[in-house]
Length: 256
Length: 270
Image 1 (tube, rainbow over the protein chains, first blue to last red):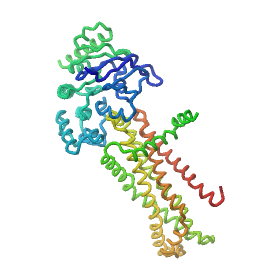
Image 2: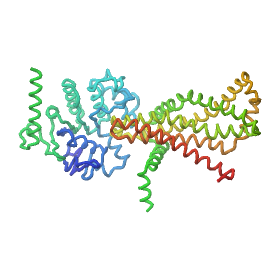
Image 3: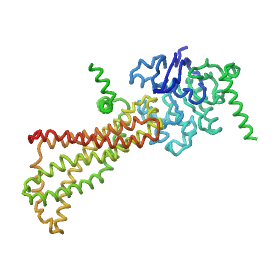
Image 4: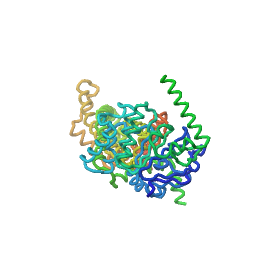
């Protein structure tokens, strides 16, 4: 089975700061979801930015769809990006365009079909994410939950083989979070797309299924499923689960 | 050695501005992406930079044109320089004030708007989002602004010159009907235009095209550079806008002086 994305001995340091990522290794297979968990400031978002070429690694290799991204020129890398979707933590929709125009943007820019084809594909994506009624609204006038779903729609509109998501559920209430996680799972099931999802939310990681890799002091622990992770003897993973239990307890008390 | 100088120069402020200008110019000849979309963006940008600025440019031109004609037609004959009326009009309005004031206006209005718009896009990760979609921000954002500013600057300068000359003439003629002190303005419109046209040389025509185009390119490149190079901090946006406008003013004035050099050499001063 061909590997969709692979990262080998990745190292990265922001100028004038401590090393964020020391030795990160993982690979993603077709249709697989890899959830990367960790505390804030551990370099989760940086890892996704590196995968998308928004930052340059100090060392190591990133291969996307079989190509070493460090060897690609700008034009070839832009071509490759058509097969990779990205969802930012802040939805990063273009504020001067409507939801529809935002989702249609990559299709129009890359000349992917005529006007009817674009409309059909965007309508489908908006319907799939249950935001068609908001298509003519501007990002400033809709809620964060709708914006996040629009960002997912934009990421999947090019029918990519891989979608990278940075904290897709951050800042959402429990209902919006649940809806979004269900929609993400739906997209993966229907489109058979691989996903790398970064989150600090272990429960979201469990709901998404797939393998969970924990980012600890700049290194990624061997990805495993939720149950295996729960039984993992690593002190950092135990700390994460303790936090999760405390959080659940607090929520229970609040509910009571 | 040359490579070292090139690399060193490329990292400098001027080098980066030149690189951005060249990249934007390259987009005009090397077409990638959706042309219809680029055209729509270009038209929208021309509307903002050019069409919406016409009333302001026309007003300024009218005021400056009237003042220049008034001074030239009343003061100059008194000092025995009445025959140079046309030269003064060409020198002041067409060669200097027209392109310079229009460039200042475009830098203040469009330049600041561009820096703020792009700076906010950068802070809100919208520019990064474009990159992740395989969309080149220079092609998608900088090029339409660059092309529109160049086209608009040229058109606005032509409008400025025409309004300053014709509008100024009409205003001063009207004033001369009511105020006796202005009665020295005896020129008919035909004689007025004849003197101005007689004073215009080929160089004035060439500079009339080159200066606005160049100033437009300078304003848009500086504004876009400061906008897209904002760090991810919202407090940087107003600073970038201020720097963009101030640097545009400085560069425009500097280049305006450089453009005057051929004329100084022509009269033997250089």
